Amino acid sequence: MIMAGLKQVLKKLFSRTSSFDTSVLEELLLATDIGVHVSEQIIQEWKRQKGTKSTDSFYQIVKDLLSSRLIYVPFQASIDAYTIVLLVGVNGTGKTSTAAKLAHYLRMHDHRRVIFSACDTYRAAAIEQLSKHAEQLSVRLIKQHAGADPAAVLYDSIVSLQSQKNGVICADTAGRFHTNEGLMNELRKIKSVAKKRLPEAQIHTMLVLDASTGQNALQQARIYHEEIGVDSIVLAKYDSAGEGGILVPIAEQLKLGCSFLATGENYEDLEVFDPDLFSKNLLGLQ
Image (cartoon, rainbow, N blue to C red; front, side, top):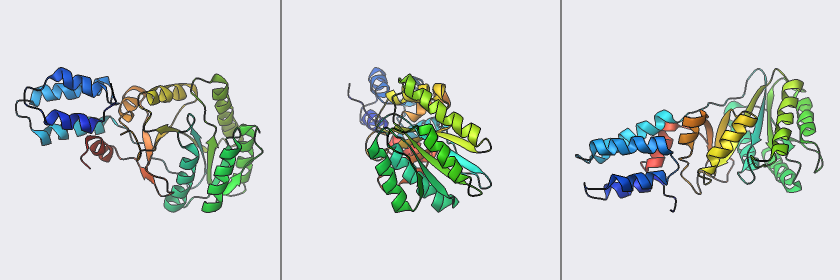
């Protein structure tokens, strides 16, 4: 079955007559990314209300149901201490561009000094891309040659950070599939170096998920969280593909929340996650 968005499903629901078959609704809802549990709750509410078929009240109930399950994780760099952000995720989710957007956000909103740490040493193109962002944003970049030890790059970045009283390291790590144990071990090493070299720092592991990934994003989040610990999610490419309903089962099953939505290609296109607005978008109410 072709994946459908929640707003398309509900629009189809209310275009039908009062004899709408709830088995069809169940099939359609389960084809979205919101998960079995929430789908079942929506179906039960539809059964309860279908006599009146009140579109507004039904949508309000569904919106409240969604927003009450979504989790917002505030992210703010410490003013009086150091912060290290580890951007992790599978290949192609947009970690490097997210690092650039986050650096811009921190400088504009929190007025933090930012250092880029080019911990993706597997691809020379990744270092070049981060270098361009660093130049355009006037951000210091710490890098080594392609193939270098990523943990050593982070170590150098911490040494550089310690030359100032506070600041933020945005560490762009290599994309790795969550099933690759060797690369997951490398992430553990990077995180261990951060804790040992700068124990007083706030370390925030940010998982970058592609909004169009669908149910596979739940598995990515589960394994990353189990293997290295995830503090929050950035939902990237939110403007281009999926509706992001996968955040609902991620919050319900893993108790993981979202900090930001990446909504475009520009540095300014990083929005603080708002469960209420996000739920409205899922329902097509915005």
